[in-house]
Length: 497
Image (cartoon, rainbow, N blue to C red; front, side):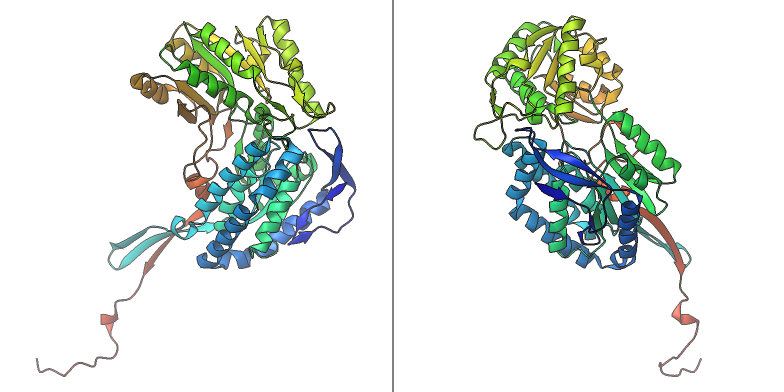
Protein backbone atom coordinates (compact mmCIF):
# COMPACT_ATOMS: atom_id res chain seq x y z
CA UNK A 1 0.00 0.00 0.00
CA UNK A 2 1.49 3.31 -1.08
CA UNK A 3 1.96 6.51 0.87
CA UNK A 4 1.50 9.75 -1.04
CA UNK A 5 3.18 12.74 0.56
CA UNK A 6 3.71 16.41 -0.27
CA UNK A 7 6.26 17.59 -2.83
CA UNK A 8 7.99 20.63 -1.35
CA UNK A 9 11.14 22.37 -2.59
CA UNK A 10 11.89 19.75 -5.20
CA UNK A 11 11.54 16.58 -3.12
CA UNK A 12 9.06 14.49 -1.11
CA UNK A 13 8.22 15.96 2.27
CA UNK A 14 10.00 14.20 5.13
CA UNK A 15 8.39 16.00 8.05
CA UNK A 16 6.09 14.61 10.73
CA UNK A 17 2.49 14.14 9.53
CA UNK A 18 -0.41 14.43 11.97
CA UNK A 19 -3.30 13.45 9.68
CA UNK A 20 -3.77 11.20 6.66
CA UNK A 21 -6.56 10.24 4.29
CA UNK A 22 -7.38 7.05 2.44
CA UNK A 23 -7.10 6.48 -1.31
CA UNK A 24 -9.19 3.74 -2.96
CA UNK A 25 -9.24 1.86 -6.23
CA UNK A 26 -12.78 2.69 -7.42
CA UNK A 27 -13.03 -0.41 -9.61
CA UNK A 28 -12.37 -2.83 -6.77
CA UNK A 29 -13.29 -0.85 -3.67
CA UNK A 30 -9.91 -1.78 -2.20
CA UNK A 31 -7.78 0.58 -0.15
CA UNK A 32 -4.76 1.38 -2.34
CA UNK A 33 -2.86 3.87 -0.24
CA UNK A 34 -2.80 6.76 2.18
CA UNK A 35 -2.25 10.43 1.52
CA UNK A 36 -0.69 12.89 3.96
CA UNK A 37 -2.91 15.80 4.95
CA UNK A 38 -1.27 19.20 5.39
CA UNK A 39 -1.50 21.22 8.54
CA UNK A 40 -0.50 24.85 8.83
CA UNK A 41 3.18 23.96 9.15
CA UNK A 42 3.15 22.15 5.79
CA UNK A 43 1.26 25.05 4.19
CA UNK A 44 3.85 27.47 5.53
CA UNK A 45 6.71 25.27 4.32
CA UNK A 46 5.30 24.98 0.78
CA UNK A 47 4.60 28.71 0.53
CA UNK A 48 8.04 29.55 1.94
CA UNK A 49 9.71 27.29 -0.63
CA UNK A 50 7.79 28.99 -3.42
CA UNK A 51 8.56 32.45 -2.07
CA UNK A 52 12.28 31.67 -1.83
CA UNK A 53 12.35 30.37 -5.40
CA UNK A 54 10.41 33.30 -6.84
CA UNK A 55 13.10 36.02 -7.30
CA UNK A 56 15.41 33.80 -9.34
CA UNK A 57 12.59 32.33 -11.43
CA UNK A 58 11.07 35.76 -12.04
CA UNK A 59 14.42 36.94 -13.36
CA UNK A 60 15.10 33.82 -15.45
CA UNK A 61 15.19 34.57 -19.15
CA UNK A 62 12.24 33.74 -21.36
CA UNK A 63 14.59 31.41 -23.23
CA UNK A 64 15.27 29.41 -20.06
CA UNK A 65 11.59 29.26 -19.11
CA UNK A 66 10.53 28.09 -22.55
CA UNK A 67 13.35 25.53 -22.61
CA UNK A 68 12.03 23.99 -19.37
CA UNK A 69 8.50 24.03 -20.75
CA UNK A 70 9.52 22.28 -23.97
CA UNK A 71 11.42 19.62 -22.01
CA UNK A 72 8.40 19.10 -19.74
CA UNK A 73 6.15 18.78 -22.77
CA UNK A 74 8.39 16.09 -24.27
CA UNK A 75 8.54 14.13 -21.01
CA UNK A 76 4.78 14.35 -20.58
CA UNK A 77 4.18 13.14 -24.13
CA UNK A 78 6.64 10.28 -23.72
CA UNK A 79 5.13 9.09 -20.43
CA UNK A 80 1.50 9.86 -21.11
CA UNK A 81 0.59 6.19 -20.78
CA UNK A 82 1.94 6.05 -17.23
CA UNK A 83 0.03 9.16 -16.23
CA UNK A 84 -3.19 7.83 -17.79
CA UNK A 85 -2.79 4.58 -15.84
CA UNK A 86 -2.41 6.55 -12.59
CA UNK A 87 -5.59 8.49 -13.37
CA UNK A 88 -7.55 5.30 -14.10
CA UNK A 89 -6.31 3.58 -10.95
CA UNK A 90 -7.39 6.41 -8.62
CA UNK A 91 -10.27 8.12 -10.46
CA UNK A 92 -11.76 5.13 -12.25
CA UNK A 93 -12.26 6.52 -15.76
CA UNK A 94 -11.37 4.10 -18.53
CA UNK A 95 -7.87 4.23 -20.02
CA UNK A 96 -9.01 5.74 -23.32
CA UNK A 97 -10.74 8.55 -21.43
CA UNK A 98 -7.68 9.08 -19.22
CA UNK A 99 -5.49 9.20 -22.32
CA UNK A 100 -7.76 11.86 -23.78
CA UNK A 101 -7.42 13.85 -20.56
CA UNK A 102 -3.63 13.80 -20.87
CA UNK A 103 -3.89 14.87 -24.52
CA UNK A 104 -5.95 17.93 -23.58
CA UNK A 105 -3.40 18.70 -20.86
CA UNK A 106 -0.67 18.60 -23.49
CA UNK A 107 -2.54 21.26 -25.49
CA UNK A 108 -2.37 23.64 -22.54
CA UNK A 109 1.33 22.93 -22.06
CA UNK A 110 2.02 23.55 -25.74
CA UNK A 111 0.30 26.93 -25.54
CA UNK A 112 2.48 27.91 -22.59
CA UNK A 113 5.59 26.90 -24.55
CA UNK A 114 5.01 30.02 -26.66
CA UNK A 115 5.58 32.30 -23.69
CA UNK A 116 8.25 34.50 -25.39
CA UNK A 117 5.56 35.62 -27.83
CA UNK A 118 2.76 35.77 -25.26
CA UNK A 119 4.55 38.17 -22.93
CA UNK A 120 5.29 40.85 -25.50
CA UNK A 121 4.13 44.27 -24.36
CA UNK A 122 3.21 47.43 -26.27
CA UNK A 123 5.32 50.43 -27.24
CA UNK A 124 4.39 54.00 -28.23
CA UNK A 125 7.16 56.23 -29.53
CA UNK A 126 7.22 60.00 -29.04
CA UNK A 127 3.96 60.38 -27.11
CA UNK A 128 5.39 63.77 -26.22
CA UNK A 129 8.58 65.36 -27.45
CA UNK A 130 11.30 62.73 -26.96
CA UNK A 131 9.06 60.79 -24.52
CA UNK A 132 8.27 57.09 -25.11
CA UNK A 133 5.81 54.84 -23.26
CA UNK A 134 5.81 51.05 -23.12
CA UNK A 135 4.07 48.33 -21.15
CA UNK A 136 5.49 45.14 -19.65
CA UNK A 137 3.85 42.11 -18.05
CA UNK A 138 5.35 40.81 -14.84
CA UNK A 139 4.56 37.80 -12.64
CA UNK A 140 2.49 38.05 -9.45
CA UNK A 141 4.66 35.96 -7.12
CA UNK A 142 3.45 32.84 -5.29
CA UNK A 143 0.15 31.52 -6.66
CA UNK A 144 -2.09 28.70 -5.46
CA UNK A 145 -3.92 26.14 -7.63
CA UNK A 146 -6.73 24.06 -6.11
CA UNK A 147 -7.89 21.32 -8.46
CA UNK A 148 -10.78 18.80 -8.41
CA UNK A 149 -10.93 15.00 -8.48
CA UNK A 150 -12.52 14.58 -11.89
CA UNK A 151 -9.50 15.63 -13.99
CA UNK A 152 -6.45 15.05 -11.78
CA UNK A 153 -4.00 15.54 -14.67
CA UNK A 154 -5.71 18.01 -17.00
CA UNK A 155 -6.97 20.68 -14.61
CA UNK A 156 -3.64 21.22 -12.82
CA UNK A 157 -2.06 21.59 -16.25
CA UNK A 158 -4.63 24.18 -17.24
CA UNK A 159 -2.99 26.51 -14.71
CA UNK A 160 0.49 25.40 -13.67
CA UNK A 161 2.28 25.76 -17.07
CA UNK A 162 0.93 29.27 -17.65
CA UNK A 163 1.75 30.34 -14.11
CA UNK A 164 5.30 28.99 -14.37
CA UNK A 165 5.83 30.34 -17.88
CA UNK A 166 4.86 33.82 -16.69
CA UNK A 167 7.51 33.68 -13.95
CA UNK A 168 5.38 32.78 -10.94
CA UNK A 169 5.99 30.02 -8.42
CA UNK A 170 3.18 27.61 -7.54
CA UNK A 171 1.63 25.67 -4.69
CA UNK A 172 -0.73 23.04 -6.12
CA UNK A 173 -3.41 21.45 -3.90
CA UNK A 174 -4.94 18.49 -5.77
CA UNK A 175 -7.98 16.51 -4.67
CA UNK A 176 -7.25 14.13 -1.83
CA UNK A 177 -9.35 11.49 -3.64
CA UNK A 178 -6.80 10.98 -6.46
CA UNK A 179 -3.57 12.74 -5.47
CA UNK A 180 -0.89 10.67 -7.23
CA UNK A 181 -1.15 12.32 -10.66
CA UNK A 182 0.01 15.67 -9.29
CA UNK A 183 3.10 14.14 -7.69
CA UNK A 184 3.95 12.36 -10.96
CA UNK A 185 3.58 15.68 -12.80
CA UNK A 186 5.83 17.44 -10.26
CA UNK A 187 8.50 14.78 -10.78
CA UNK A 188 8.37 15.37 -14.54
CA UNK A 189 8.79 19.12 -14.01
CA UNK A 190 11.87 18.44 -11.86
CA UNK A 191 13.29 16.13 -14.53
CA UNK A 192 12.70 18.89 -17.09
CA UNK A 193 14.97 21.20 -15.10
CA UNK A 194 12.47 23.29 -13.16
CA UNK A 195 14.33 24.75 -10.16
CA UNK A 196 13.45 23.53 -6.69
CA UNK A 197 10.57 25.39 -5.08
CA UNK A 198 9.01 26.69 -8.30
CA UNK A 199 6.32 23.97 -8.10
CA UNK A 200 5.18 22.48 -4.81
CA UNK A 201 2.37 19.96 -4.22
CA UNK A 202 0.38 20.14 -1.01
CA UNK A 203 -2.15 17.40 -0.17
CA UNK A 204 -5.07 17.67 2.19
CA UNK A 205 -8.53 18.99 2.86
CA UNK A 206 -10.09 22.27 3.95
CA UNK A 207 -7.15 23.01 6.26
CA UNK A 208 -4.81 23.19 3.25
CA UNK A 209 -7.33 25.15 1.18
CA UNK A 210 -7.92 27.73 3.89
CA UNK A 211 -4.19 27.93 4.51
CA UNK A 212 -3.62 29.01 0.92
CA UNK A 213 -6.63 31.33 0.83
CA UNK A 214 -5.52 33.18 3.94
CA UNK A 215 -1.73 33.13 3.55
CA UNK A 216 -0.44 36.69 3.05
CA UNK A 217 2.34 35.57 0.69
CA UNK A 218 -0.01 33.90 -1.79
CA UNK A 219 -1.01 36.47 -4.44
CA UNK A 220 -3.59 34.56 -6.50
CA UNK A 221 -5.78 31.46 -6.43
CA UNK A 222 -7.07 29.32 -9.31
CA UNK A 223 -9.86 26.90 -8.41
CA UNK A 224 -12.13 24.38 -10.12
CA UNK A 225 -14.93 22.62 -8.24
CA UNK A 226 -18.54 22.87 -7.17
CA UNK A 227 -20.37 26.20 -7.14
CA UNK A 228 -20.77 26.45 -3.33
CA UNK A 229 -17.04 25.90 -2.83
CA UNK A 230 -16.14 28.16 -5.75
CA UNK A 231 -18.16 30.95 -4.15
CA UNK A 232 -16.43 30.31 -0.81
CA UNK A 233 -12.98 30.32 -2.43
CA UNK A 234 -13.73 33.54 -4.30
CA UNK A 235 -15.15 35.38 -1.30
CA UNK A 236 -12.45 34.20 1.10
CA UNK A 237 -9.56 34.77 -1.29
CA UNK A 238 -10.65 38.24 -2.35
CA UNK A 239 -11.32 39.19 1.25
CA UNK A 240 -7.65 38.43 1.87
CA UNK A 241 -6.56 40.62 -1.03
CA UNK A 242 -5.95 37.92 -3.63
CA UNK A 243 -6.73 37.72 -7.32
CA UNK A 244 -9.12 34.76 -7.73
CA UNK A 245 -10.52 32.75 -10.62
CA UNK A 246 -12.98 30.17 -9.27
CA UNK A 247 -14.72 27.91 -11.77
CA UNK A 248 -17.87 26.35 -10.35
CA UNK A 249 -20.53 23.82 -11.25
CA UNK A 250 -22.82 23.32 -14.19
CA UNK A 251 -26.09 22.01 -15.50
CA UNK A 252 -25.36 21.75 -19.19
CA UNK A 253 -28.26 21.59 -21.65
CA UNK A 254 -28.25 20.06 -25.14
CA UNK A 255 -31.07 21.45 -27.27
CA UNK A 256 -32.29 19.18 -30.07
CA UNK A 257 -34.40 20.91 -32.73
CA UNK A 258 -36.90 19.03 -34.94
CA UNK A 259 -34.64 19.27 -38.01
CA UNK A 260 -31.62 17.71 -36.25
CA UNK A 261 -30.03 14.41 -37.23
CA UNK A 262 -31.44 12.34 -34.36
CA UNK A 263 -28.86 9.57 -34.69
CA UNK A 264 -26.06 12.11 -34.35
CA UNK A 265 -27.87 13.75 -31.42
CA UNK A 266 -28.44 10.42 -29.65
CA UNK A 267 -24.78 9.42 -30.06
CA UNK A 268 -23.73 12.79 -28.69
CA UNK A 269 -26.10 12.61 -25.72
CA UNK A 270 -24.77 9.22 -24.67
CA UNK A 271 -21.11 10.18 -25.13
CA UNK A 272 -21.48 13.55 -23.40
CA UNK A 273 -23.76 12.28 -20.64
CA UNK A 274 -21.92 9.14 -19.60
CA UNK A 275 -18.28 9.62 -20.58
CA UNK A 276 -16.10 9.63 -17.46
CA UNK A 277 -19.23 8.38 -15.63
CA UNK A 278 -20.71 11.86 -15.94
CA UNK A 279 -18.07 13.24 -13.56
CA UNK A 280 -17.15 16.31 -15.57
CA UNK A 281 -18.36 19.87 -15.42
CA UNK A 282 -18.91 19.90 -19.18
CA UNK A 283 -21.04 16.73 -19.21
CA UNK A 284 -24.47 17.03 -20.80
CA UNK A 285 -26.95 16.37 -18.01
CA UNK A 286 -30.12 17.75 -19.65
CA UNK A 287 -31.38 16.99 -23.16
CA UNK A 288 -33.98 19.54 -24.25
CA UNK A 289 -36.17 17.81 -26.84
CA UNK A 290 -38.15 20.29 -28.93
CA UNK A 291 -41.49 18.83 -30.10
CA UNK A 292 -42.08 16.54 -31.87
CA UNK A 293 -38.73 14.71 -31.54
CA UNK A 294 -39.04 13.56 -27.90
CA UNK A 295 -40.27 9.99 -28.37
CA UNK A 296 -37.86 9.11 -31.16
CA UNK A 297 -34.90 10.74 -29.43
CA UNK A 298 -35.51 9.01 -26.08
CA UNK A 299 -35.83 5.65 -27.83
CA UNK A 300 -32.56 6.14 -29.71
CA UNK A 301 -30.70 7.22 -26.55
CA UNK A 302 -32.06 4.27 -24.55
CA UNK A 303 -31.10 1.83 -27.30
CA UNK A 304 -27.51 3.05 -27.27
CA UNK A 305 -27.28 2.97 -23.47
CA UNK A 306 -28.20 -0.72 -23.39
CA UNK A 307 -25.04 -1.61 -25.28
CA UNK A 308 -22.58 0.35 -23.12
CA UNK A 309 -19.82 -1.81 -21.61
CA UNK A 310 -19.42 -0.75 -17.97
CA UNK A 311 -16.47 -2.02 -15.98
CA UNK A 312 -12.90 -1.74 -14.77
CA UNK A 313 -11.25 0.86 -16.98
CA UNK A 314 -8.10 -1.24 -17.24
CA UNK A 315 -10.02 -4.02 -19.00
CA UNK A 316 -10.28 -4.10 -22.78
CA UNK A 317 -13.50 -2.76 -24.22
CA UNK A 318 -14.87 -0.99 -21.15
CA UNK A 319 -16.49 2.33 -22.06
CA UNK A 320 -17.45 3.69 -18.63
CA UNK A 321 -15.86 3.05 -15.28
CA UNK A 322 -16.96 3.36 -11.65
CA UNK A 323 -17.57 6.54 -9.70
CA UNK A 324 -14.68 7.95 -7.74
CA UNK A 325 -15.73 6.99 -4.18
CA UNK A 326 -18.39 4.90 -2.48
CA UNK A 327 -19.87 8.02 -0.85
CA UNK A 328 -20.16 9.78 -4.21
CA UNK A 329 -21.73 6.69 -5.80
CA UNK A 330 -24.31 6.56 -3.01
CA UNK A 331 -25.06 10.27 -3.43
CA UNK A 332 -25.61 9.95 -7.18
CA UNK A 333 -27.77 6.85 -6.68
CA UNK A 334 -29.97 8.78 -4.26
CA UNK A 335 -30.91 11.08 -7.16
CA UNK A 336 -32.24 8.09 -9.07
CA UNK A 337 -34.56 7.38 -6.14
CA UNK A 338 -35.50 11.06 -5.94
CA UNK A 339 -36.31 11.24 -9.65
CA UNK A 340 -38.67 8.28 -9.39
CA UNK A 341 -40.35 9.72 -6.30
CA UNK A 342 -40.85 13.10 -7.99
CA UNK A 343 -42.71 11.54 -10.93
CA UNK A 344 -40.11 11.51 -13.72
CA UNK A 345 -40.25 8.55 -16.09
CA UNK A 346 -37.33 6.18 -15.44
CA UNK A 347 -36.61 5.17 -19.04
CA UNK A 348 -33.33 3.36 -18.23
CA UNK A 349 -32.40 2.28 -14.69
CA UNK A 350 -28.61 2.19 -14.34
CA UNK A 351 -28.78 0.40 -11.02
CA UNK A 352 -29.33 -2.87 -12.85
CA UNK A 353 -26.72 -2.45 -15.59
CA UNK A 354 -24.28 -5.40 -15.87
CA UNK A 355 -20.72 -4.64 -14.77
CA UNK A 356 -17.41 -6.09 -15.94
CA UNK A 357 -15.56 -5.66 -12.67
CA UNK A 358 -15.32 -6.53 -9.00
CA UNK A 359 -18.63 -6.45 -7.15
CA UNK A 360 -17.11 -4.20 -4.48
CA UNK A 361 -16.38 -1.40 -6.96
CA UNK A 362 -18.23 1.89 -6.85
CA UNK A 363 -20.61 1.11 -9.72
CA UNK A 364 -23.65 2.85 -11.08
CA UNK A 365 -24.73 2.28 -14.66
CA UNK A 366 -26.07 4.97 -17.01
CA UNK A 367 -29.53 6.22 -16.08
CA UNK A 368 -32.07 8.05 -18.25
CA UNK A 369 -35.09 10.04 -17.04
CA UNK A 370 -37.80 11.29 -19.37
CA UNK A 371 -40.55 13.87 -18.79
CA UNK A 372 -38.43 15.75 -16.27
CA UNK A 373 -39.70 19.11 -15.02
CA UNK A 374 -37.72 22.07 -13.73
CA UNK A 375 -38.84 21.61 -10.13
CA UNK A 376 -37.29 18.14 -9.76
CA UNK A 377 -33.93 17.72 -8.05
CA UNK A 378 -32.64 15.67 -10.99
CA UNK A 379 -33.00 18.89 -12.97
CA UNK A 380 -32.04 21.56 -10.44
CA UNK A 381 -28.96 19.94 -8.88
CA UNK A 382 -25.55 19.23 -10.33
CA UNK A 383 -25.54 15.45 -9.86
CA UNK A 384 -22.05 14.85 -11.27
CA UNK A 385 -22.76 11.28 -12.26
CA UNK A 386 -24.22 9.13 -15.08
CA UNK A 387 -27.77 10.48 -14.86
CA UNK A 388 -29.28 12.09 -17.96
CA UNK A 389 -32.59 13.98 -17.90
CA UNK A 390 -34.85 14.71 -20.87
CA UNK A 391 -37.02 17.83 -20.70
CA UNK A 392 -39.62 18.25 -23.45
CA UNK A 393 -40.51 21.72 -24.72
CA UNK A 394 -42.85 22.93 -27.49
CA UNK A 395 -40.56 25.38 -29.31
CA UNK A 396 -37.13 26.93 -29.81
CA UNK A 397 -38.19 29.92 -27.70
CA UNK A 398 -39.22 27.65 -24.83
CA UNK A 399 -35.86 25.86 -25.05
CA UNK A 400 -33.99 29.17 -24.94
CA UNK A 401 -36.02 30.34 -21.93
CA UNK A 402 -35.18 27.08 -20.16
CA UNK A 403 -31.43 27.34 -20.76
CA UNK A 404 -31.22 31.05 -19.92
CA UNK A 405 -33.39 30.62 -16.84
CA UNK A 406 -30.96 28.17 -15.29
CA UNK A 407 -28.58 29.67 -12.70
CA UNK A 408 -25.59 27.92 -14.28
CA UNK A 409 -23.94 29.06 -17.50
CA UNK A 410 -21.03 26.75 -18.15
CA UNK A 411 -21.57 24.86 -21.41
CA UNK A 412 -24.43 24.21 -23.81
CA UNK A 413 -25.04 22.70 -27.23
CA UNK A 414 -27.59 22.86 -30.00
CA UNK A 415 -28.22 20.13 -32.56
CA UNK A 416 -29.75 21.37 -35.79
CA UNK A 417 -29.21 21.55 -39.54
CA UNK A 418 -30.54 25.12 -39.64
CA UNK A 419 -27.67 27.61 -39.77
CA UNK A 420 -29.94 30.51 -38.91
CA UNK A 421 -31.22 28.78 -35.78
CA UNK A 422 -27.67 27.91 -34.72
CA UNK A 423 -26.48 31.47 -35.24
CA UNK A 424 -29.41 32.84 -33.27
CA UNK A 425 -28.73 30.36 -30.48
CA UNK A 426 -25.05 31.23 -30.12
CA UNK A 427 -25.99 34.92 -30.01
CA UNK A 428 -28.85 34.67 -27.50
CA UNK A 429 -27.77 31.94 -25.09
CA UNK A 430 -26.33 33.13 -21.76
CA UNK A 431 -23.62 30.51 -21.46
CA UNK A 432 -19.85 30.81 -21.70
CA UNK A 433 -19.09 27.86 -24.02
CA UNK A 434 -21.38 26.89 -26.89
CA UNK A 435 -21.35 23.87 -29.20
CA UNK A 436 -23.16 23.64 -32.55
CA UNK A 437 -23.60 19.92 -33.24
CA UNK A 438 -20.74 19.49 -30.75
CA UNK A 439 -21.93 18.21 -27.34
CA UNK A 440 -18.90 19.11 -25.19
CA UNK A 441 -17.51 22.42 -26.48
CA UNK A 442 -14.31 22.54 -24.42
CA UNK A 443 -12.09 25.14 -26.10
CA UNK A 444 -8.73 24.14 -27.56
CA UNK A 445 -5.64 25.28 -25.67
CA UNK A 446 -5.24 28.62 -27.44
CA UNK A 447 -8.73 29.79 -26.47
CA UNK A 448 -9.90 30.01 -22.86
CA UNK A 449 -12.22 27.86 -20.74
CA UNK A 450 -14.94 29.24 -18.49
CA UNK A 451 -18.62 29.81 -17.97
CA UNK A 452 -21.01 32.55 -16.96
CA UNK A 453 -23.39 33.17 -14.05
CA UNK A 454 -22.97 30.72 -11.14
CA UNK A 455 -20.40 28.71 -13.08
CA UNK A 456 -17.65 31.32 -12.67
CA UNK A 457 -16.57 33.65 -9.87
CA UNK A 458 -14.11 36.26 -10.99
CA UNK A 459 -13.78 37.69 -14.48
CA UNK A 460 -10.95 35.59 -15.92
CA UNK A 461 -11.29 32.20 -17.60
CA UNK A 462 -8.78 29.35 -17.49
CA UNK A 463 -5.74 28.80 -19.73
CA UNK A 464 -5.20 30.39 -23.14
CA UNK A 465 -4.99 34.19 -23.38
CA UNK A 466 -7.01 34.63 -20.18
CA UNK A 467 -4.49 32.47 -18.35
CA UNK A 468 -1.63 34.75 -19.34
CA UNK A 469 -3.67 37.76 -18.24
CA UNK A 470 -4.49 36.19 -14.88
CA UNK A 471 -0.92 35.23 -13.99
CA UNK A 472 0.64 38.59 -14.85
CA UNK A 473 0.16 42.23 -13.95
CA UNK A 474 0.91 45.14 -16.22
CA UNK A 475 3.43 47.87 -15.62
CA UNK A 476 3.67 50.98 -17.79
CA UNK A 477 6.99 52.81 -18.14
CA UNK A 478 7.29 56.40 -19.39
CA UNK A 479 10.84 57.50 -20.22
CA UNK A 480 12.72 60.43 -21.71
CA UNK A 481 16.34 60.48 -22.79
CA UNK A 482 18.36 63.56 -23.62
CA UNK A 483 19.10 64.07 -27.30
CA UNK A 484 22.87 63.74 -27.96
CA UNK A 485 22.80 67.03 -29.88
CA UNK A 486 22.74 68.96 -26.61
CA UNK A 487 26.54 68.91 -26.46
CA UNK A 488 29.55 66.65 -26.19
CA UNK A 489 32.49 65.83 -28.49
CA UNK A 490 32.22 67.00 -32.10
CA UNK A 491 34.64 65.34 -34.54
CA UNK A 492 33.43 67.24 -37.58
CA UNK A 493 35.61 69.63 -39.63
CA UNK A 494 35.59 73.23 -38.35
CA UNK A 495 33.60 75.62 -40.48
CA UNK A 496 33.70 79.36 -40.92
CA UNK A 497 30.20 80.70 -40.60
